[in-house]
Amino acid sequence: MKGPATMTLLLLSLALCWSLGMASDNEFFLEFLQTLLVGGLEDLYEGPLASYDINPDCKAAMSELKSCIDNLAPMHKAELVKLLVAVLDSPGGEA
Image 1 (cartoon, rainbow, N blue to C red):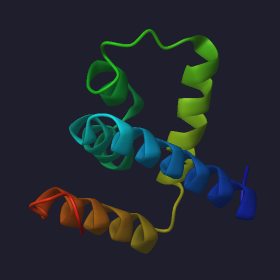
Image 2 (cartoon, rainbow, N blue to C red):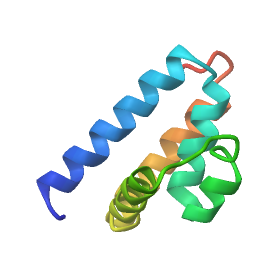
Image 3 (cartoon, rainbow, N blue to C red):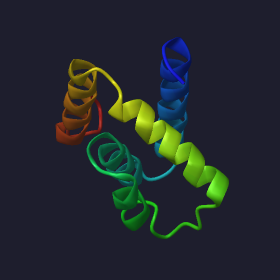
Image 4 (cartoon, one colour):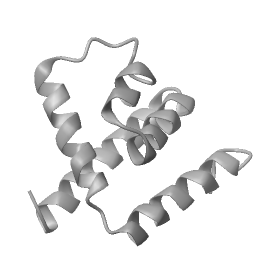
């Protein structure tokens, strides 16, 4: 999957994760997003997702999402990392 479809999938996934993070524990969401941006799939399964039973279809989706993120232009990925750092550094979670 390439081009606009990839970015749409990525943005929808991040929006979903963000809304889930707002509804529950922001710490989980931020760890999940950080690992998704700079870690590997195994880091996700051993870290923020360790306490969840991830089925094969979800693992396939996570693999595709991770591939989309890994294939972002370096400057775009760097901007996402900078945004994450800003969120982590903000006192009330507001960047």
